[in-house]
Image 1 (cartoon, rainbow, N blue to C red):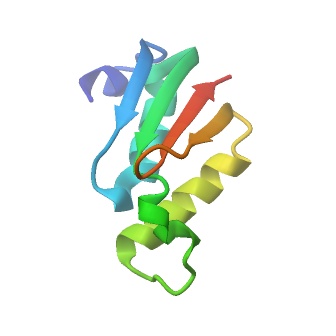
Image 2: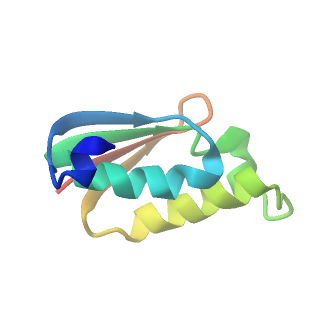
Image 3: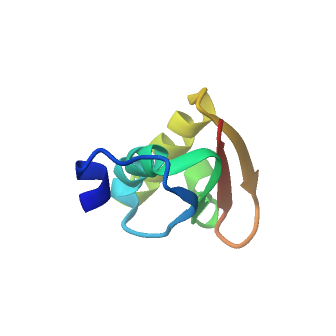
Length: 95
């Protein structure tokens, strides 16, 4: 993003992630720089049809989503909520 490269930050109130699952963490970290304090990052598919709770599922996307969920759970920069709608919808409010 040219704005991020130019040193701009905290420009947005809302962002939505629904892309390739293995890069969710990279998208999230970039958005943490672009979303203002009090802004919301919404992430789709974080329950992945319940497969994130299945330890036998070692699919690349499933493993990436498990890691993503663990990172957000431990992130002190956000207030976190997970809505069990569809494949899961995570709400991360930047502090």
